[in-house]
Length: 113
Length: 122
Image: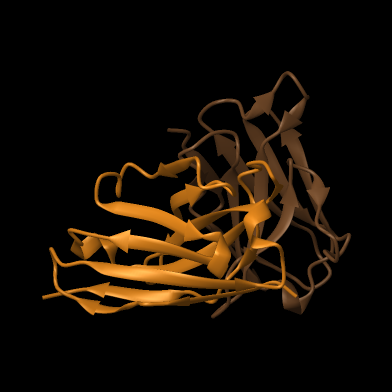
């Protein structure tokens, strides 16, 4: 199974500042045939189900603010919130969509400092 | 608007069975693979099982393989999860989840239900 490791477990960022979340996979999730990284990011706010933010490592879903961006390739990935807003307080999860069993990172809690 | 409504959760003793259902609407159900994802109280996300749009392929997490069975009825726009031999560690909120891929597995999830809580306790 592919193990997904996120860091940090939590972070506190001032409003308007940058938040950076890291995700590392135990093996590459890059498909050479199409040059796509099968890495997904979700946002889960308290009391709500997760919401899909980004797929294929960097493709933002429709309606997701452009302050959210994803980057990385192979085994190392990053979710960046360029200017943290109050409504971004949530737990963020990465997930590999490369092969079953699908696996998630342990989550990163983002709070306001 | 996509809607996924789970039902069937509840309190059950270890070793017993439970069947979860998910009623889907707002999209052409038969064109999309579906999954179950669970979240233990205060914990992270765990993928449980998936089934292809045409019912021809299923897959399971090792933790539930041999005990859980996923199925779907495209005529009823419904997804099911039969859970047998339940264990304490199966206690979780179970989400019905839609795969993003049209007539293919993309293995990421663009719509989630609100979940149904399964509590396994003696």
